[in-house]
Length: 453
Image 1 (spheres, rainbow, N blue to C red):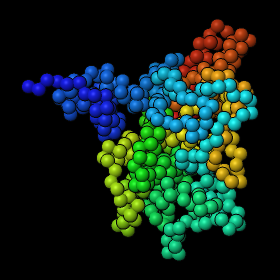
Image 2: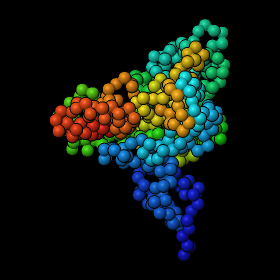
Image 3: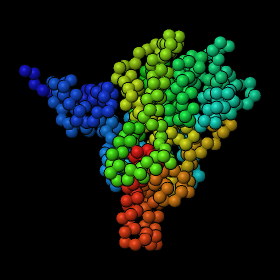
Image 4: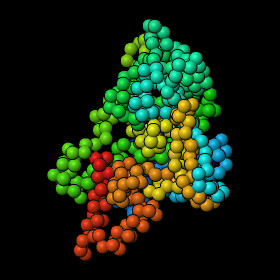
């Protein structure tokens, strides 16, 4: 009988990532059981399995400090090998723990008004009015800058009279850079993508459009440069994530805390995000666009673009239904307000009194480029914050808005101070006021977990 061995960290990590990719909905105990079954010669504790999956951002924390039990929160991991110097020497990444995840802190003092860094998007799913300009040849198909009569403007190189593509680019540089995504979303080169893009546009589903852009970049980069692909793949997998189903799993607890008539009224009046039926339709169009086109002609055109076959583990991680929901969750949490996904920007955490702001200064030459500007003096070692919600909203509305996105009760300095001042001012009626407020906060958090706020 062969003695059991303890696998190396790299071997164990590779095996666990493959199993998780094939079974994205399984938790740690079941993944561990599959590992033991697949590698009977190994001796691995469940604790070690959990630690590796947590380090890879593949374990959802059921609760965090101050969280309602049963409500799940986003997880993220540090991007290994991230070269921040490409953007700035003024900040560094710091990991704050499981509940908060990663963030950015100032390496040196930053003065009010300083530009901390500039960044072009990893992918762009612009606001729908700009997307419509792109599809009507009035905005650059890559950087989204409005087009002029400049002689530098060039059309999609694949567009023909028989298979037209309406997309144009503000320069040959943007045309070249669009090769990272556009071929797989081009009406001429990959007509199988049209139903997915039309579905996203018709439902104004920016998250789905962003996922289409992101998937196109991942697939095309693998065809062009495997080293660049590995860098992109590590980046997108490190993004903060909370799957669509995880947001809905608080439903049974919500039923126990809120009366049925209240829940029905809330759902009728406010509705929900795209529901499970829409998720499944979106997944169908997603597969049709990138993996299983509906017609033979579309299959041939897609095959011309994707000649190198992806490893099975990556295919499953991209296209399995549960994985698809998690990719939607990643896009949901990390898009900048105008639809760009930015590598360094995605590290920024929230505060209701942010110390940096996101600006689009280059509106005539590079509309999608963002500049991060210090709103006040920032001390060395201080964390950089943006706001995820309108800072003009009152306390309760800010907290509820954050809960809609899957975050817990905001306990930033401003929220804590305003809550303290409200209590000191005696805003709460009677001795039961505090308990009622806590119950309202719990109810709001649970509703947000359902995605029905």
